[in-house]
Amino acid sequence: MLILTRKKDEAIRLGEDIRIVLVQIKGGQVRIGIECPSTLRVLREELYEAVRQENMKATSSDPAHLAMLPKHTKSPSDVSKPS
Image 1: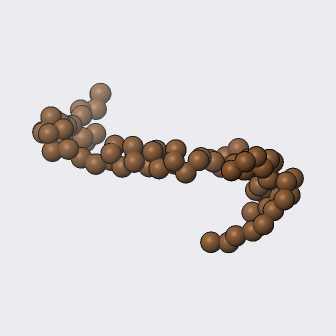
Image 2 (image 1 turned 180 degrees about the horizontal axis):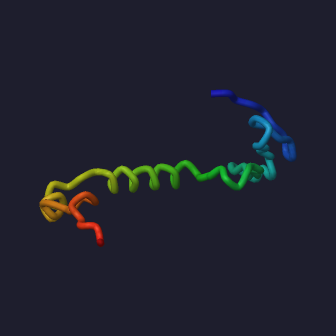
């Protein structure tokens, strides 16, 4: 982990596209501003973890749910072609 010291209104650059600015220091909190491309997702750690956990749950298979799936589905080669 890289640890840097910054004062209010000082910034940190990550590559060419990301700029992190120390906006405010108040009590035990620090406010930061993040400038980055709109294609880059920026999440608080706790929200990132919640999304990750939900994704893990969504991808795990429950045997009870698998039993409800049809036993056979038609493949494209099974479907007759119109003449």
